[in-house]
Length: 287
Image 1 (tube, rainbow, N blue to C red):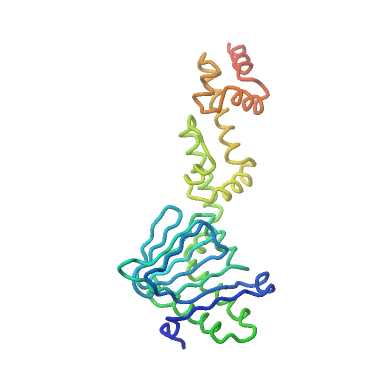
Image 2: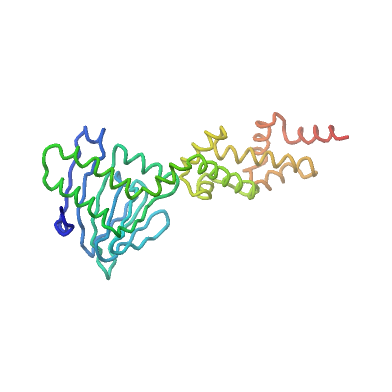
């Protein structure tokens, strides 16, 4: 059995083979860092990352949040999104770290990211993550032929262990979660129908990735989120046209269309009539 102390000064960098990149979970870097100057600030990076704090304090910043990790705490991150992590100035962080990517791991990370579950923080109170990482380190330290095949399931195991609660949640009610997201966004649109919307704003409302939100709307409603916004604005404008003599330009402005022309074109595309024609038809149909 390997002890964590054996790897306090360990580092391993490696270029995965083509076969491993295509078929396995891989790591091109791992080790232990213990430096007051430890500081990483990147827009994007190809890998995902696990960090376990062995001592001191580690600061992590991502998605507008700041996390302060202490001894025994670990974090699982998706590095393709902007991120920053660094050692505390007064309490230098000693950190086990593992970069990973590839088959299986990318899929579960993508699912967790879609539901805005990342980064994942976990208290490694029983030392399970520490043991898993030291086991992976020990395999790469031996550098025996075929070690990529040996560490692939080990990488997948530590990733799914950290993600276990999230995976249980996603597996238990994926359709319910999807329905709740759609309902939340639709409710927000209706409550703020006169405002301007953006895809980023709608995704933030439901705490999901904007690309996932687009796929969800397309699969369940058959249109994109922004097309749904236009649809609801047009539907709402019908009531204004029916209940008032408000001019078309004012209606367009009230509902935050870019201009009257945009509103009129959107209305006609949905109803086959211009706003003026619709109002006239409605008035003529009244007893």
